[in-house]
Length: 378
Image (tube, rainbow, N blue to C red; front, side, top):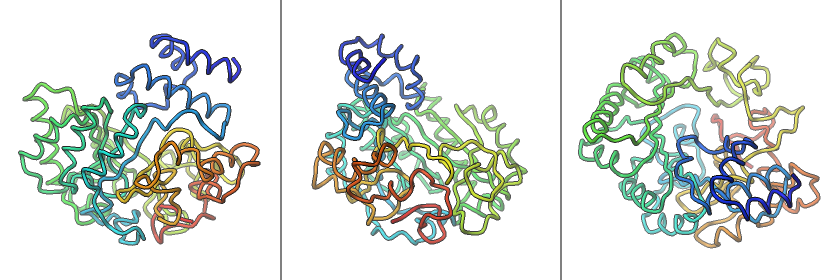
């Protein structure tokens, strides 16, 4: 089917036909499988239009982003040494998203966004209004996900409110099964506190016969925890959680690689000189692999600054500010069109954005990093 034929089909088809189309064309892979049930007719139409526009590499879009990363705060209680927040080197001023600002942003996106990720460069539970934010998303049929280190002394009442807030998925990184291993990367953290909070959340879910939030545990594969991987995977059955997996770590390729595990399958193959064999969506300097972000998602920082993806930590790379311009204007601005043009014929590049610099080579040594972190900057 041509571009026009696919657009016409999307505009004139019913929900079940569109869902079958999404599966058949493998567009459905772009949505978290747990979020599929939150689709309605307007959202699936926007999602499929965005997917088709991405496939045909359109630069000015009729569709809107269907994934929103909205950061409740860029502050964190830990000091992870590969993260700009943990290192204290981010140039964006520390702050917290206010509830009225949050609702203003959500009200702009709620008719077409499918997934809302309430985290990016900080620990979301440090925002005292987080549970209220999650409830507001639930009221507006928005699928939500947060990633928390859970290494805070969270009161039982707070945890119960979190579980009952409407949160759809809680992701927790557990990078060591004992304090000695855990604290090597999750500096200032406490594994006993993490497990205590996690077990309380599991108990609250069971006591209230709740299916959600889905509990997803991950261990970032590093040299110091490699011997614990198999025992970590057993937590799925031991704790009765939904997902337990080993993830690959992002690191600064120009810095010390001592964090990387011995198992090359657990290192991204796109890291230069790493010998990694793990699958990666990021291209190398020899292969131009179009980036998914300019057509699918948008990152909004607590201060309203808009970034094109979650690897960018640089206010100078902001495309605009959501508090000053509506998403309709930002999404087809010169910066977004220039970014999408990087992966087409490049005729419409009028501004050199972080995307035109990155070229989806996120693991390349040539990119500027936020000091010792994996985050990229102009």
